[in-house]
Length: 368
Ligand SMILES: *Cc1c(COP(=O)(O)O)cnc(C)c1O
Image (tube, rainbow, N blue to C red; front, side):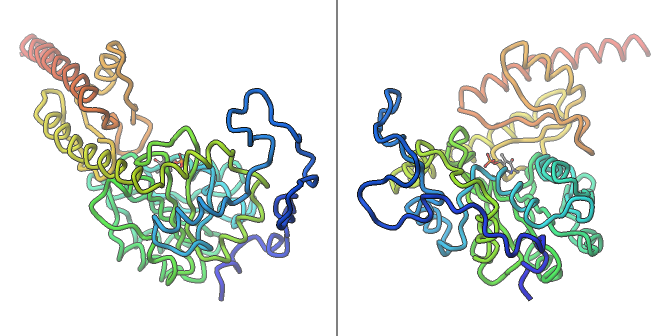
């Protein structure tokens, strides 16, 4: 049985919009799409008068090569956010179906579900270790559950799940639900990607993005890797021309061999800085714990996170307050920046730690 049997049945025969671009084959003079025959003044490339390729073949091939998967298992998306949205809309019927998320985790899974009007089943990560609750998740997957999100490395904890555990979960849910491995930060992790497992695992979807390691958050380009029939379904419900031509060009440039070498150097620099900043933070007064992270950020537990946040902001440094995430009420998430940016963060928090320690020392003394 194909996992498409779990998609919204009314979409299986739905052809989607047939765009001029998709119907065109060959040709030299293009009078089929009501485009302007002249380029406009703001168009330095003199190509923007034409609609872009719905799934640009060169970029798709580059992504497939980079991820070591077949091109027909790649859907080029406007970032992973669009991949999450498409999966939700294709597989989940409003008022009937459900998705499983493991908080504290990335918020867009629940947002996409809420927009579509489907239930969100929450199975909490393990307290303290934030390990993914594989058995409890499998047990929570009743008939309405169509999508199960495994964010690895997880945002905002930085923890990873073992490949074998994700594959075992997918096997357990084989004909029932898609297991969606969100690998937005996998380039910063020690372990391998699950992309290579998609071919053997028809209900596994891997989300990748150029927004983090590839330094292209502004271009909004990601890749959804899945069985070809899943990719084909999502493509039919996607906007006809989702990717803007300048963004396609930026992504193609980012995946050229020399650019990929530069990306590797940046990733190595972030990993080294992550270790340095984690060590330095752990030694500061006012810091309770630095969660071990496989991503490009650190979740840091503090005695008084609100005051640290305010202090950093007063010095122009913006971090993410994690107070609304379960189990992280005392934590801030700090992205690893350039070395001098990390130094600035450490300087502010060092001074803040000394001050809060002496203040609390005084108040303890006064109370005694
Ligand atoms: C940043 C992030 C994304 C978003 O990716 P885009 O490709 O920019 O949409 C997806 N998943 C997680 C866990 C993230 O932290």
